[in-house]
Image (tube, rainbow, N blue to C red; front, top):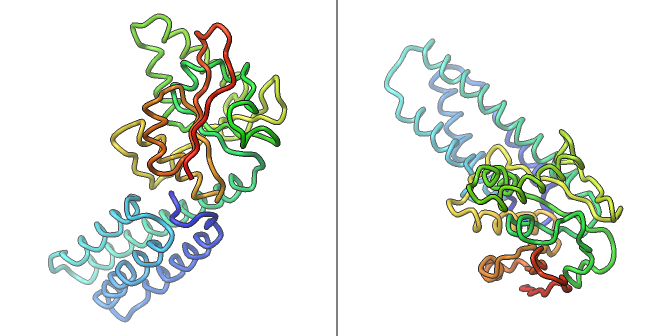
Length: 279
């Protein structure tokens, strides 16, 4: 889930717990009609406004709440047994959904606790830039000159690399395979755990997965920028987007994400990357 408020993980965890508690309260009532009314009030007066304090309206959880509300509110007349069965199913479903959301937030708590300045890599940085295990990441941007660096690869980027393994362009295919094999050698089956680069113990790389309720943008470049912005809001620190694509750098400046251009593999003598910061 994307957060509205920088550094707001703890507050979001508390709110989700409260919303789960109110869901339990809504299950009580003297009749099925009474319990239905309580469930509708939970959707309208608790779940939507309380979760809306922490998560943007674009997240799919709000669509799911609206669908539940409409299905119950517009349900045709039915027997007490049928209505109780419908309500019980929805309570179980929402209990599991909120449990998953709590687990996701707990994982974000661990994510934000890891040390290092965050640098998000887009597909061009991995495909066209100097191979990530051979690059001096402290030279990419002035903010990375000292201290540990966290390289974050959105799962969308991994998906794009996997797609490029099947392209007709032989060089692109070879480069994509090299990057994926190198990442696999570092991570194995634990891609979300930071792995130190061979040449720099204070530089780690990890894959950032989409949450259960995240809704991607239609444009992949825009989605990667949005992921960088989400990490910026999540951690409360300036996030840097590494790219070899000038257009991507310009696009990222609009939502105030710092961008840094990586030197390309085909440059004879890769120079220190130029960078542009918006903030």
